[in-house]
Image 1 (spheres, rainbow, N blue to C red):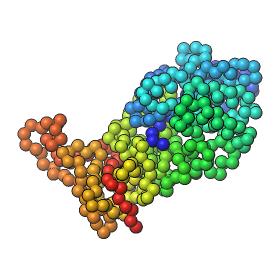
Image 2: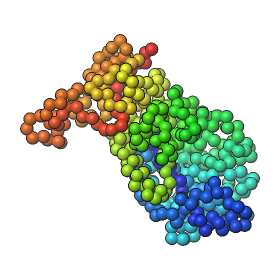
Image 3: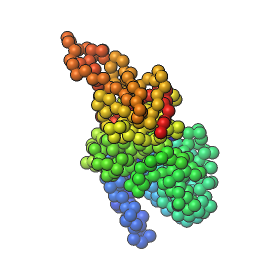
Image 4: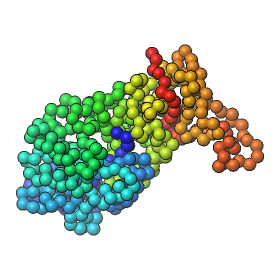
Length: 416
């Protein structure tokens, strides 16, 4: 619940010749899952670079896709009689290559958590799937598990999903750090993407579910594919660019009791420089405003969202005795937030604003509270010492791009 942002990576798939060989004795292949653009021979495998990208974008964990029937780790249940499991070859054609282990090590070197997504299969129809999933848990100790494929197609009893989740927690070295998706059994079809029941979190597929307006019932993860996030914003307004949209989703999701996971492939060829550039800008914003995101909780005594009197969107988060009002636009020299009542002695700051006194003056008004952001516009005389904020040329400093965090201590009251 504290990480708030994750990088989701579609894992390495089989090469064309492997795919054809597998299906040669099984009839026509299912083209839906013929992801040649993800194949191991489609580009350079760079686990260190992918882990560094997660770190640079401010993600606190990384989820890596395993796949089925082709898996990208050396399973002892692959290539045995009656098993459909096949191991994807390495980047130089090596057999039994451990893609999962390589990226897991690089992720953990950076202090990030590692998770996986594995296509859940009916154990009765795929007898080696259950054993291979236990194998993944034992070897890689994933901190979070996503499920796909048959997860809603059969009852929990047929899927033996309770047994699988029990195995997961009983075999983690630190079970208190584990988290599984709440999507295992046909009884959850009606509430899929809507609320949490028995798992640790539920999924919201970005393109199929609108932005929440109330705090979620349970904890959720909003999944956004990199190149689709600019199609829709949480405010249903015209997108202002990829980075702004990603950050709006991160802020909105955090305020409504969730995480954001941005999904990319391990190798998107000519698009990788764009992905790295944009995702690193998310990290730049978090370097300034991470205090308003990481480790926060929704404002249950107030509202998760609102607007200033000038119609700038606000999302609220809380931590300890502070409220963060995160603005989706620059307010200028002042802003009025309706429905708030401050106590005497309330301290107001803007995160990242480097001036001698970072506190902002405020005035109680009939409609709420007016916050003043001083601006002089006059240049200082003499040489500028950039190491000393008191000698900066201008007294107002815009701390970042895209969104701006106002910290209010103590937490005010919400009034109608």
